[in-house]
Length: 114
Length: 113
Image (cartoon, rainbow over all chains, first blue to last red; front, side, top):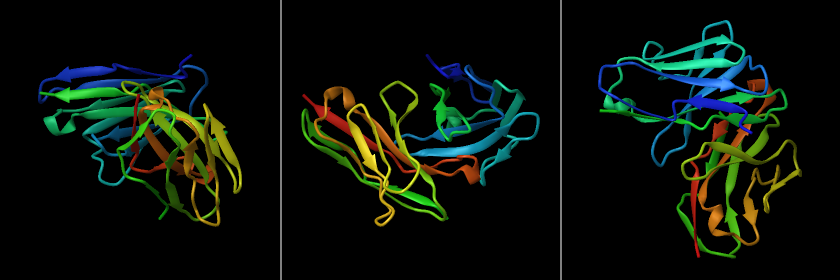
């Protein structure tokens, strides 16, 4: 069964609204989760590392105020795209790592901003 | 810094053909190497991995050998099926970086019946 669950899998919103995407680790407690963005025909881009109980670590060029990450528990991290615009339309993926190094990915969330 | 280079796609093959998707890397230290696959409409899945030089990862008929001398981790399959059509990503990561992966651009594979 799935190890990581992401919700929603697809969301359409109007420009200027905020959208929250959830990432849940189902099988084990995760102190660290990763958020990626995938552009069409391009590779995954790591956006940020979500650390339970502390502030997320953002990659260079990723706006912290735009992409709010909250890792409130050992099984849940959320990504909120604030004041979304069409250029934020993308496929957002979360992943969870075990101490063995294996990564488990969510199903991904496709965001379309009209 | 560390990087991963994958062959560009799409790669189009006929069913039962032999597949090779090239992946080379540059890295300091001794990273682990991974192949991930994304089937249409689904999330990423780990396909196989190798954690040290000369290790061979294998799964679902796919294989890749960690070659330190050529800094490569090419993905191979002897006889592809239509169901193998997907996007394949090569990646490297290390325990030191908490396995924050560095990704290749992905290679789209199309298998025609």
